[in-house]
Each structure stands twice: as C-alpha cells, then as structure tokens.
Amino acid sequence: MSELIYDINELDFNKLYSYADYLRWRFEERVELIRGQIFRMSPAPTKYHQQISFALSGIFYNSVYQKGCEVFAAPFDLRLGKTNESNEFITTVVQPDFCIFCGENKTDYQGGIAAPDLIVEILSPGTSKKDKTLKFDLYEENGVREYWIIDPSDKSVLIYVAENGKFIGKKPVTEGDILSSFIFPELKFELALIF
Image 1 (spheres, rainbow, N blue to C red):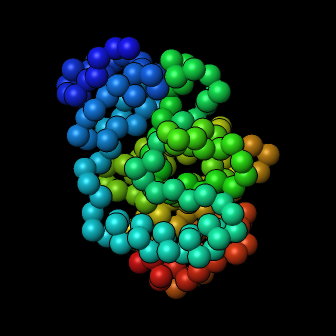
Image 2 (cartoon, rainbow, N blue to C red; image 1 turned 135 degrees about the vertical axis):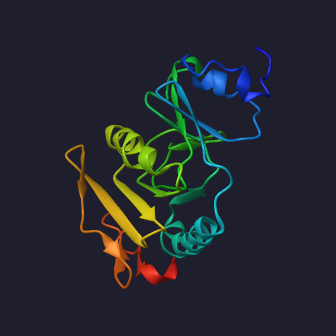
C-alpha cells in the first residue's frame, strides 16, 4: 500500500484522483473528490450553519429515522458513480450536510455507497456555487430522489425532486412557510424551526 499523505500541498491539483488515493490522505482540512478533481471544503461551518444542522438532526430523527431509514450528517463520505467497482475506479466522494437512505445495501462501514433518497446541503459562502451547479448535476445523474438547498442568508429552501431522471424545481420555501418533503410525507415542519 502507498504511504499516507499528510500535507495537501503535496498534491497536484491538475491531476485526477480516485477513492483509493482519497483513503491515503490525512489532511486537517476536509476535501471532496468530484469526478477525480479535488475540491477544498469551507473552513469550519459558521455558528448559524451548525444551528440549522442541529435543528434538522432532531427533525429528521423524529420523522424518517424512526421509520427505518438511516440519517447521516457531515462529515460522512458518500461515494457516487459505479461504487461496486474497486476503490481505484471510484472518482467521486462528497460530504453532503445530510443524507437520508431508505432500503438496504446503500451504506457500508466507510459511508454511503449508493444514491441517498434525500440530500440536504446548507449553503456556505465558499460552497454556494458548487452546491447549486456541480453537486446539483452530480446528484441528479446519480439518482438522488430529492435534493434540498438551504440558504441561511435569505432563510429559504430550494427543493428539487427527481422526475424521469431529471430534477424538477418546486416552489421555493421561505420564512413563514411549511417545508414538506415530496418523497417523505411525514417530513413536514415549519421553516422557522430551523432558522
């Protein structure tokens, strides 16, 4: 096995990497691997981001977790693509803020190995564009059934639901509204609970 790499500056950011490479990295900062490219993640989340995340944890636990689904919060490695291949051929590993998996054989001891039913990203200034474009496309093409993009700055949520393999945007949920999942009818709450 190759030696571990502890300094992110030792890597060539113009090179493409695999999950096998990713497993050897021991950086202090978190990174994601999308189609073989390295993406640095934002520094530690803001207090507001963490408050939203904590509120969602309780809501998810009380609705979908008790129905037999698995709920994971970042940091949590989600491998996408042909994840039944060996680690050398997996080129995408992301860390969504939340993943909800229902059904069997979607996770293993290292993280997620199949598309979650629902993914939630809470925008940070440094990740907004990536979450709205690159990850949007990635989640759509890998079969995520529902994708929420939470924007703390304007207290809104964009919801996309997969229909015939494409995400369809639903009416934005804003302050004072009820947020309802389209695939989990029991997941319904006042948006004010997370802001």
